Image (cartoon, rainbow, N blue to C red; front, side, top):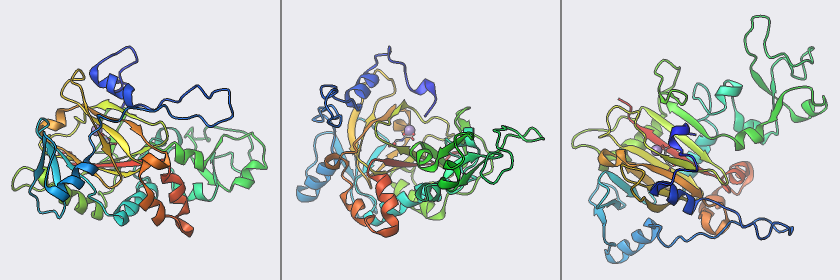
Length: 361
Ligand code: OGA
Ligand code: MN
C-alpha cells in the first residue's frame, strides 16, 4: 500500500524483513486434505513487548522493566518511552471503549466520503456511502450499464470521451440482468478498502501531499484529540497542528511493510497513531533495515507517538490477530452487539483500523 520501494522483495534478507517473516500470518498446510478450516501457524510471541502487562505491573507496584521509562504528563494515564528509541512514546489504553467505537464508526462511514480519497478512487472514481451500500447489499455498476439505462452495452465512455462514473444499485435489479455489466458488490469493496485520507490529501502515486486536491479540514473532534495526545512528544511551548491523516484498514492477512514516513516537512513534530479493532504486532526498527526491530503489541485504544529521532526509524505491521482469543476486542463487540450496530460488529471482528495524524508543514 505504500509503494513498492517500501516492501522489499523476497530475496532481500534484512533484519527487518526477517522479523516481518517471523510474525506474518502463515497457515498450517498439514490439514490441507481434511475438511477442517485451515489453522494459522503458531508463532513465538515471547519476545513481543507487551505494554498492557507493563502498565498493569506499573500501576500495582510502580515497577518497570529495564529500558522502559514512564513520563510525567498532564494525562491521567501513564505514557511510556524507550531508553534506546528517543522520540517514541506508547500510551496504552489512551481511548475509552466508547471513544474506540466512535472512531471505528467514523472510519467506516464519514472518513471515506469524498472529497477524501481512498484506494478505490483510482479505479472507480469517488464513491459515496460505501458502508451503507454494503449494509444494504447494493452493487456498484459502471454508469451507462445500470438497470435503468436503455443502453445495455458496456461503454467505458460517453460522447464527450469522459470516463463514466460508477453508481450503486439494488442488488436484485442488477442480478436479474445477467452478467453483461461491469459490477462489484459493495460488501466486497468494503473488504478491499485499504486506506482513506483526511485533511490534506496524500498522493500515493507520487508519494507526496497534493495541496491542490480538494479537501476538508480534519474533523474537529479528531483534531482536538490529536493535539491532546501529541503533547508529550511536542517541542516545549509548541502545539501540534493536525493537517492530514491516513486511515489504514487491515483485514485477515493484511500487513504494512517496513517504511519511513518522510514526506512531512518538520520531523520534530510527532505522528499520532491510534489503533482500533483487532490486536496487531508493530515492529519498530532503527534507521537502517539492518537494525533488528523491536516487536510490540498494539491493542484497540493504544496510541503511539513518533517524533524526532523515532521519525527516522523503519516501522511496520506484519500481523493482525483476528481469532477470538488474540484479537482482544470483547468490550467493543459488546458495544456493537445491538440492532443497527451489528454491521460494525461484523466488520471489526476480523479487522484493524489505524488512524495516523500528521502535521505536514
Ligand atoms: C502508517 C503506519 C502504523 C499502524 O500508516 O504510516 O505506520 O499502526 N501505520 O498501522
Ligand atoms: Mn508509518
